[in-house]
Image 1 (cartoon, helix red, strand yellow):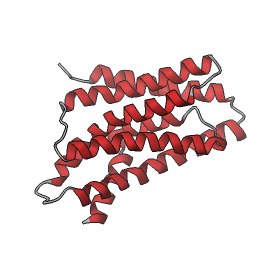
Image 2: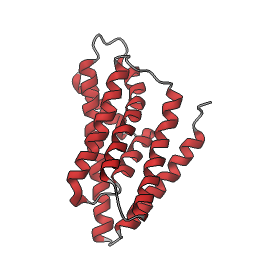
Image 3: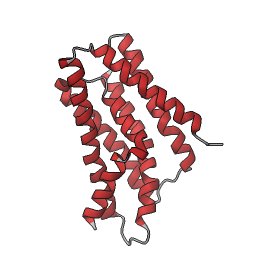
Length: 190
């Protein structure tokens, strides 16, 4: 059972049908260089804490939100993060603590997005604790792959192809903002 939920969590985060979560992690990490791995680790941990809390709370029926609202808020988190990256890049300054808080807060929203899928998987399980732990670990493993691939791409572009960090951030954030805008326009929250 543990391995099944671990695999389901892993597959869920890496499923291109749910590319909004992948895109959020990419845009969140876009402002960092590989040499800033400690900052990336803190950032990913903040996001993990956020989405783990709301995933658990939702799975245990402590909180409940309309899925349509969450599906609107997720691309909004991508858009806000992308715009934040652009603004901070223009100022040649990144408020790292604000970035961590944003990751934590937006993690709450993404956890609610994960919870809809997770609750559908649970079915008639007697206990949610083990499936919840396994699913969340699977999500984290998949998320680490996304972070690693993002950092490899950043390294190739900035160190091998000699793209300036500012241009890298603007490109990734601009692309993410464009996709997020389309997702927002497609959202049916009314």
